[in-house]
Amino acid sequence: MSLSTSPVFSAYPLEDYRNHKQAIDDSLARALEHGHYILGNEVAAFEKEFATYTQTKHCIGVANGTDAIEVILRALDIGPNCKVALPSHTAVASASAIARAGATPVFVDIDLESRTICPHALESLLSSPLGVNVKAVLAVHIYGHSCDLASLQAVADKHGVILLEDCAQAHGATFQSKPVGSIGRAAAFSFYPTKNLGAIGDGGGITTNDDELANRMNIIRQYGWKDRYISACEGVNSRLDELQAAILRVKLQSLSRSILQRRKLATLYNELLNGSSIVMPPTCKSGCEHAYHLYVVRCSKRDALMKHLLGHGVPAALHYPAAIHQQPGYYHITKQSPALPNTDALVKEILTLPLQPYLSEEAIRFTCAVIREFEI
Ligand SMILES: Cc1ncc(COP(=O)(O)O)c(C=O)c1O
Image (cartoon, rainbow, N blue to C red):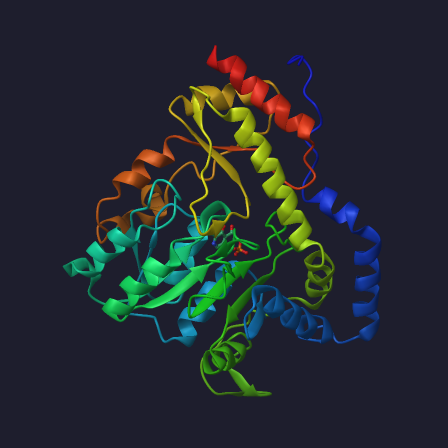
């Protein structure tokens, strides 16, 4: 394969819009003509359809994934003087939502194989003085790999802590054959445009099987209104937009297919990178089905390899260049968290290779050939 000219790395999510253009245009026209632009038919229908997809009783549409976490915590009365445990190896939004709810994030180290929160590390935290006042654990299914929800649930139950899920990167992932988002007390989803299920703008959702909690979250997302203009509790304004819901309904129909395509492309990467002396492909733990939101390898010469890939036109990226406890805005929290040796080790070596459902096999073969050339 010639490495002098790179193949096309198709633009995502633009390609996704183009692929669904007619259906999206029709859906938008229907929503516009309906004339009910806030929490109308489209949001209600999407909530039902997404609850069915995640095999949950309720979905509550909110403005984005960060708000989804905040609304869950508010509904559970987890705020000032409460702590929420989470990994530091996640999008900063996971922690900022906790802080927005008034609670304190406490970081827990990760398991290096799944890159998700480690149940043993959680147990250590909850058994230590730092674990006092931890009311919930936010299990982030990073990159599309489910956390070990069974072990986390056992630890959480032992310490009387609530298990919540951050599914922003994991639409379509499963744990022990159950969709993520259906196992914790409640789960937050983001529909940011690049997510596995993406709107054309911001969007978010919460899933739960708890009727009472669903009712509270429904109220909180709209000013705390139980009845119009009468607030039953303090609330926020965080509604899923009607037009975004109309778009999400279209894209939801092909979500299962697009996850299968992500898995197929990830398998091709795994085959082509097998035996590499320089990169370690991601693994999928038994009992989990990966949703491959991101395909993230480990490489001890990460920075040099990234430069090499970018130099050949391969859009490699970092998710994320720093863990949350390494970011200045969150230094103050580091003091209240235990040491995070696995997180510190992983963050220096992660490298995201291009992966999205419209990527050609040629682009993946090219990427792997560029990596193999670097090895020599
Ligand atoms: C793991 C994780 N949690 C939460 C969020 C927040 O979602 P949003 O950007 O929709 O607020 C994101 C988005 O990047 C995320 O990746």
